[in-house]
Length: 614
Ligand SMILES: Nc1ncnc2c1ncn2[C@@H]1O[C@H](COP(=O)(O)OP(=O)(O)OP(=O)(O)O)[C@@H](O)[C@H]1O
Image 1 (cartoon, rainbow, N blue to C red):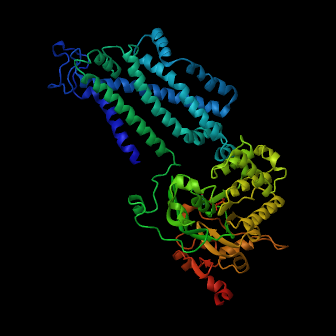
Image 2: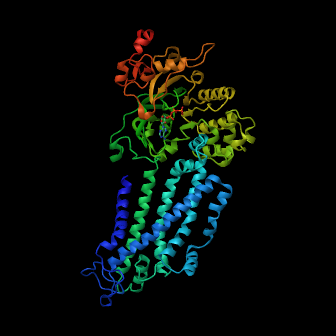
Image 3: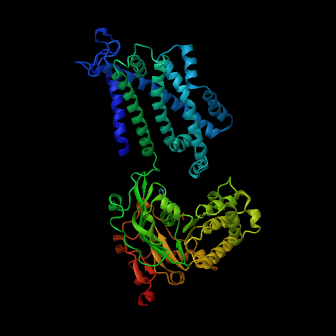
């Protein structure tokens, strides 16, 4: 919001002055006084008089009225019609697109000044003609920007979801699509107003715009140019007014775009104030173990329209070389946010506000973007759930693997292609030389995931994070991919974090497991211990929900609370059949029972007496 104050105040002041011109008690802007021609500052005329003895300040303020009036009117007319055209063209395509967006291309064929000349010749100069010319000139810009945004927005999941609900088209366009294209349209509006002010002045300067003696900044520059040698200051005032207005307008619209877009952060915060003021002065605490990755007390905050939320709070994890740590939990428990925070891939609205994540002695939460880029795809890599959307559809898979290799290794193209072929062989892609040359859509889901894994291991990562890499695959292919990942881990000795919903997958792939619930780790330990003797009621409930033999699985009543509604005490208490008043009263700490075994439940001793005694 701070970004809006200064330019907003300047624009508001200019507009206010322009509107209030008639009541400011200014001298008549067109009244000539030849006796005081080109006079300097004098009583009643603080900026002096022009070549006809007219008051410069008065003409400047009255000129703002004309310039801004023309600029705003033409930008708003073009904005409203152009946005409507773009919405129609992008949503309906076909004839709608030809009539609204393609037809605009004709206007783009005309040089702006030529078009202005044509219209002025036909209609005669004046503010009305100028508004018409400028509106027509800016129409295609708005139509094309909105059209492009609508095209990308219409395929987004949330737009599809509203369509699936059967919402009427006008409602989808105005309530779902329009707010998402508002940012770029606002930026276009700022450009249009600023450029209209310049064009209005330019056309008036050429005698094609505002008709003298009416005041306008363009006419003032034109007049001052002729007398530049006798009174150079006359040129300064309208030029300064133009520059200030355009600059303030651009800054204001930039700020506005950020303010109306809920995806931009309300205020990106660094983890510690001292890091911001004196970077590196107070060293962060060191890692406590020799783990490849050690996450300590990570908390991530996300700015949402309903206020900040903390979908990940106080999460501590670690994974050693040659080990797989599974993170398991229901949807919305914070697994992906944790992983993306470590990778430095959080969206702009999300910021890690507390904690550390140590990788090779560096706290990755405090590295700059170039430093993170050097790590991503190199020492730490990630494999995502949906390989179809992670692979670029217009490049062959080979080219993408080669690009991943060359991003971190200074080797020739031929060597990179040879390495890519080796990688394909390693991840079990038959006929690798031929498969390198195909496009993602020509491969099966399992093959595409093998390509993603090949890209992940291309630069021998120390840490591979797999975010539900088998969820989109059928059971047989899933088993093959899990085997492949297990083999790769054994061979390379890399550490692996495996995010999944499935407890079956956890027991197949992981050495240790962290169970997450509502943004917190609720239990952690070796897989056989956690599954053999679960200590937290949530882990028990998850295990009971796995179908086994003839027994019907037991569902967990209720849902994971949303982050803006986390309970004060134990977050699982509302769904827990063992919860007492004490559980709801205060947040339970994560208790370390012994090395590598932790639980966040104040009643675990009572609920698991054998473990408590042991
Ligand atoms: N950009 C965002 N803006 C607002 N809330 C977000 C954003 N990203 C994540 N969240 C919220 O953070 C919480 C945790 O999300 P996360 O994706 O980490 O869950 P998850 O456990 O990985 O779930 P899933 O298994 O469905 O991927 C969710 O409640 C989600 O709504």
